[in-house]
Amino acid sequence: MTHDARATSVEDLFYGVVTIGERGQVVVPAAARKAHNLHPGDKLLVFRHPHVAGLVVARLDEIQNLLDDLQQWRDFISGVAEDAREAAQT
Image 1 (cartoon, rainbow, N blue to C red):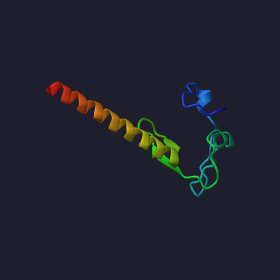
Image 2 (cartoon, rainbow, N blue to C red):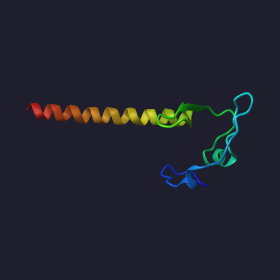
Image 3 (cartoon, helix red, strand yellow):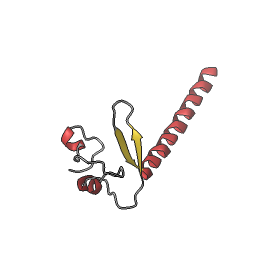
Image 4 (cartoon, rainbow, N blue to C red):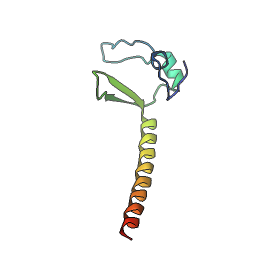
């Protein structure tokens, strides 16, 4: 299984089943670690899924990259909106 952000089938998205240990720990399946280049010591964020009773796990550095990208888009769109407002006033 290879990592593809556009994966659409269950087989592309599913890595396996994990069991929560007595101390609340889970083991990330080897296929997922390999596909996402995860190593001991990497930081992962754990979120509550907004629509189902489940969790979402994401690499901390990838979340930061996403936030940076979103900030760039926000700045760009704000500039376009400002230009449109100025053009409408003239």
